[in-house]
Length: 273
Image 1: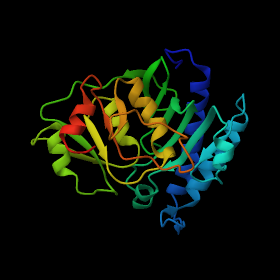
Image 2: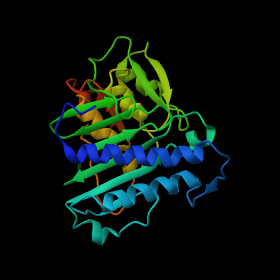
Image 3: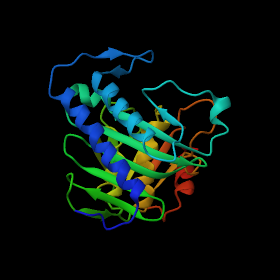
Image 4: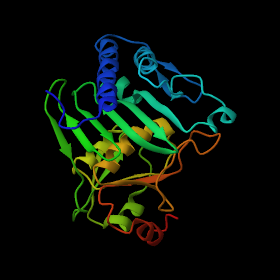
């Protein structure tokens, strides 16, 4: 089924994400070993297989741009500071969920242009759900390869609100969420960048992240959420930006569906700034 939007690069990246998803599922369906990286995060053959598919695929898509990926050696800040555009990839976001075999992991591929994610694709290999967005054309969802594309959008802040939360990185933030969206909010635990996609489809209202994340964890899904009508803000109320310096860690942030609200004021009132 042809897409209702004309964006050949986005469709190429969507196809590439599905190829990476196939490589991941080949490992997922078998017994696999789990290694620990230096930061104690898990690594599997699926991470490496998806990395290979994506890196080789991006090298065939012109113009060839620099690549930053969780599973690749990183260029120095002296090199990166001169870049205007680059690919930002997490070949398997949610390896802990992969190891638990709960299906809540994704392939994330983003194009960053002057510190902003302007194209993003997020694939959930187990369900086949694929989210694709590019600046100015909206956010789109495809339930299975070859299926129809449906435009997705966020919702007005619900009462009571639903907060998406990390399944593997909980943390105590209940009081902050109550101050932000009200005492009667409900929590929807979900792994990986699927939390952003839940907001983009109007299934939740906020995702507050107080712990560490890396740039490749958020860029693709941020583009999807922004094009669906939402926003991803640091706790000073500014949009999350990329390639800001030597560190590839994000500041703490909040992802919101209803971007029309004064979230900087809400963050101040909640004592989060």
